[in-house]
Image (cartoon, rainbow, N blue to C red; front, top):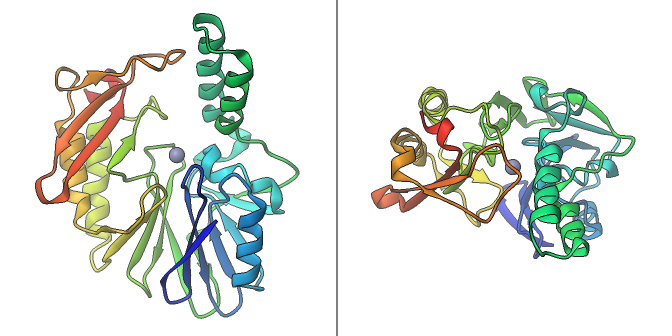
Length: 270
Ligand SMILES: [Zn+2]
């Protein structure tokens, strides 16, 4: 588990295998842990070495690479629409893909089972609570802002004191839309344009699968990419089955912002 101090009282913890970033933000009275990854022992050791404060544990959204370590904690906050009591669509998706591989491919079952383990969220006795509007960590307030898209309950965390946004997988140079079949890319672009106005004054966006922070003006380019996506401009990916439609990849040249890829069903590009 690699630890990097990103800002004052802010740390990024990244595992070597799947490379998913979790963030630890400390105040005077509490510390906030954003995402629990796969619940590695090394993560718990590093968190313990960085802070002894009581932890507030939050998921940017309910997906296994962000949530599988939730069982290590008593209470976990998630966006209301991602509460496990509402069902766990990502587990359903992972099982459907695994079933497809078992029935239609020569991939040995032992390997399918092993990969499936990484696709499932294994809950324990932890209690889930919907996210409040803000967390008071003592001298540092972290605000929450719903950003339904990648999952219905995806939520941004805002740290006004550091002008930083934490977005999980809600914005990404390689954005997965197919994880939420209800999502329309055009509507999601509109949401991000509204969020851009709300986030005026912020400078950086920290995300889960990227080394550094994205500049805040990446939002406009991301919305442009979402709006430009169209079935006839995208290519089917044929390595995934068991899903309601074939996932397509749309590649967008965002000029100075580099390439942005969107992975979505054609029906989401309407
Ligand atoms: Zn995700």
